[in-house]
Length: 346
Picture 1 (tube, rainbow, N blue to C red):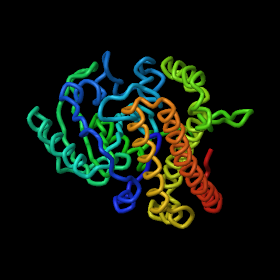
Picture 2: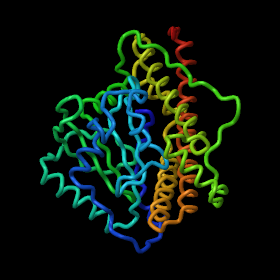
Picture 3: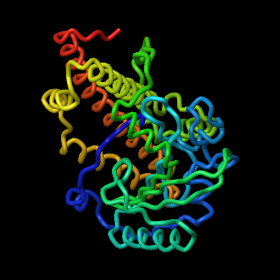
Picture 4: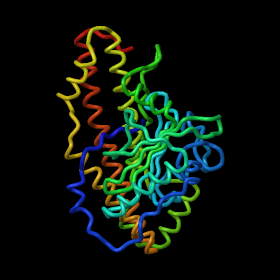
């Protein structure tokens, strides 16, 4: 996947993060919406499994951007690609739902709807999905633009409504590539192109200007995120590069026979272990922005929605930037260890 974050239990922190407010119950997507839009079956309504980002329909790609038209009850959608071969493997959807009763209702009604329409509960190993803690997992064969394909759908509501739907074969490929199962001769990743000037995201202080908001929304509608998510996109590119480099270095080093996988894991844990506190902060920042965006849209408050977009972009920038920096420390340690052991990295 382009970015990878292991979610831990953060519900105790969320309890104080969002005060209860009066709001409508969370919408449950119809089975048609699930099977033709939320799951990437290709065609006119969804992205196409197994294809790279550049080969996806440009009009459909707009939906997976800040400012894209949401599919209720979700406020944000993102395409997930395999971490090495970069094929579309799934789509993740996130939406606001800070109320416990709504969360339970979402899960219960989703279960009933899926089971009434041929989806089969899976008790097998779960495939990683961002921020999910105790996901419900279902499978079903669906017709796609490339023929019949088995899909794996996961959903959860740990303070927000989350759904991930993807091709089971490609989700398994993602896991394999994450474990350094690469084709012989796979080349070293190339760093993303740098920028002459510092990049910036949308600023909250600009959102009070109606003319600015109108121009911004016109650009987003046209698929142009310039000036809205520039820093976020740059941070995401760096995270993707460092993640791919980590996979490649581990593959090269383990394949040399001079170091085993456990020793590589030990280096990671010593140099830059994942911090549970930081992951909790990332989730709270993300969820808070999604809740604010949902509230602003329902109230028709364009300025508040714009500020929530700015907050979401800042949260995602911080998460990707922090993960890119962590991975860079790991990769530097791998390079140093490879040099010490005499492992060629050409």
